Image (cartoon, rainbow, N blue to C red; front, top):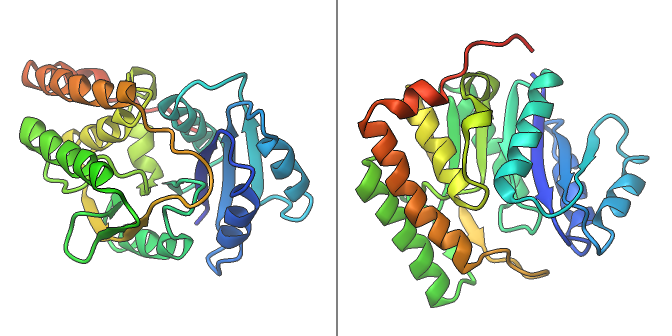
Length: 250
């Protein structure tokens, strides 16, 4: 079974070599696709040098500019489907997600789940090195999302996820609207509404030690308004009709 880790990057030169070595050093034979948004710090150039060491396991797609997290992942999903991967992961470049937890997400999908989420808010999950305001925003955002949507997921904003390829095939990616962290909510909402089995796996999320967070007030606003719009679309029956893809063979 082919496994690909999608890692969007923008100015991650301090982390990129370390995360590539950590992931590709695991026994499970993962592959990595870096989706780089024309990082001015030279992130893409570092990846291209590393490709000589990790032939046929490390790939890069370079985009014209900073186009948003959601569009980066959608680009990566389409690439992964076109290249016939069976398991497709989302992961940050900054070690907020422990590479060794990839095996636990994979195991959850191999044992029945269609979507496995690295969760901070199920029993055994936690955050580390977070300031109080970041904890408040994150927990509050998760509570708000669950309250509005009734989605049975404790950590709907999580960005550490394993999807079976059939989930991505069944979602019409061209209808995904959000480009910030609301993208994570929308993808999980779509998978849930389409009836896929979702399992949360407890992880410890560690705040980045190197580089700059991409969080902003605009991203938070998009998430708050986006959740309301998703639930309205769902209540009127439009969401599933829009989100479900007519099957395409890749």
